[in-house]
Image (cartoon, rainbow, N blue to C red; front, side, top):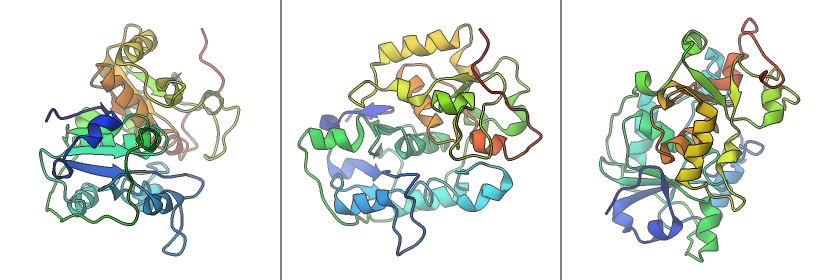
Length: 293
């Protein structure tokens, strides 16, 4: 079996033996996150009603983030601690060499790309996002199951490679060679509207590359060739290693990371706190409108 490292098609996933793949359903809606056992998040309810056979469920808030760390200025979706993420992978029965496939209901634009990137952060390469998400699976007429899935637990202890994949507050503006790409929609980037965070706008000097630009009208990723040309047009003289991605809380920015990797442009990093973390300190500068020129 050829392991997938960026995207996988529904037909390719359907052809894999259940013993050779860990499938993770990452469906989640920010407007319906749930707040306890009696108020289950919409994404989890949708999972219980129907999911790809064998898929376990990943909560953006509980498994792929640690909301208790919001007070540390790490944004609305702080990264889970290494120990916590290792426990999640252990619960799912992950083991080295096992193909991981994540999916959501938005073509990988929310939590599926976040899980892809978190696994990259701990050094796992054999992970791919389902191109077109759950909708592509259904459109192909493939089977679904209902109810919760549990797998035989494993025991893993992994560590973040922060130097290769992350950049922090202090170094964000101190590296003149870097190119900061903001994955939010243009109105939020410009500061025309801000429905979630304390104030609107963007980090001074950041360029806007909305994650939705990575997708075609069918909700699937554009071809690697087209994505490469589009990103090279944005990068100009910058190398892909100079790129730092951000968004509102470090989730949808992973979609741009995934798109660049799929296009053969490796080595970019994530500013994980993103806009919500940046504006947690009122003393940090804010820019509004489009970049001049």
